[in-house]
Length: 68
Image (tube, rainbow, N blue to C red; front, side, top):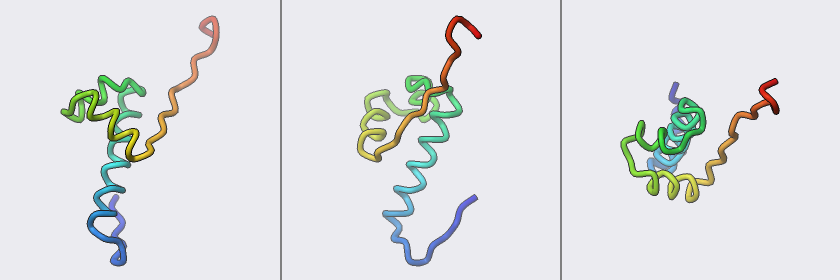
């Protein structure tokens, strides 16, 4: 769903959309960044650059020790 803020610039709206979209694709690929880059059809290094410049944090799912 897209919310339109008539006081937001196009540049800001594009930034917000791209950030949310990248975050969603990363989560959909179980935080596997190479798979996310492939899904986004960009190079891994480009994804890493976008993560850094947009301040995207990645919360990798925690696995229980010893398979519990």
